[in-house]
Image (cartoon, rainbow, N blue to C red; front, side, top):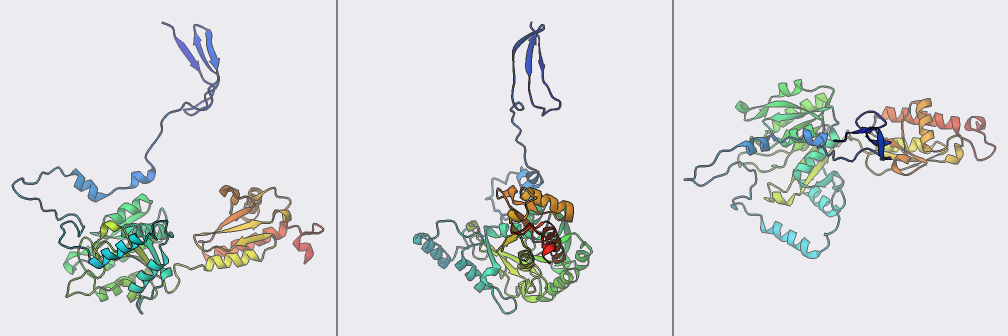
Length: 412
């Protein structure tokens, strides 16, 4: 039997395969070159998917118990009010949707935050003197679950932690862990109708705590917090400067002897993102219509103050032309390259900005748009001002005027 030796230049599992020779007893057979590494399938689950775990599904799906065949199955497990048909959707709700479908006006893409008319309707429904709302304070989502997901993504970064009730809805933990956010469980007290153990709650707060989740009325407990208890919760949040993510999907679904208090109506200083939707109270969980109500009367979440500061500061620097942003977390700045002839492009400009001023902005070549750079505006206000001051010093050092090649220092 012939034996063959394959010789490959390079080292390691992923070394490029070049100069491949097949040898048979010393004689080279069909020498040639193979470019690139050997094709092979390497599709692996993402790190995010590996962190995504639903404890409800894990437990339920592992149950192998067969029901008693002599008795009809009665399922008390699924939180869907429509399953048995005893709670029909209101005719007015169904009729409204039919009218929208028949109009043919809403079959295209909606704005990412929802149609203005719909946001206005939600704001009008929940608006009250204690917690005023406008359409701009409403973001429409694909169900309350997406509202919670978006709120978590806005409030917490990987490595931070959130405070979650125990017992509590499993989705909070599922979403948080998938995002690399730590979950700290605070206790509810059954002997006090599932009120929060406030001392335990406050003991969990540290410098990495991003938000407190308050679920009222509660899933799975069915409890409804009193006004006084909500005020105690708000006192903790205020003392510790921790914003609240309020899961209020069951709002107003209370028994006759109870009163539901939206938590945002009881505080003017604690910023609150209230998540809700049509699913439960309006008996249409499959319609996937939810929302986030933004309660931030003291602008603690922040408006565009950083954007305005940054835009104003950079606008005053010769050679730069910032473009005023209207959302997201960024501001783009045009570099008038003709005034900075020592730099070939935006990459060299930003590299020197780092080496001389320790300010790192992304060159917009990263986004296929050369001669601009991008600024992230979510850093603390004092850092924005310091960064803009350093950028100004950098530009004054390197700016060349239209005539005579004089820099700004010579013009003063």
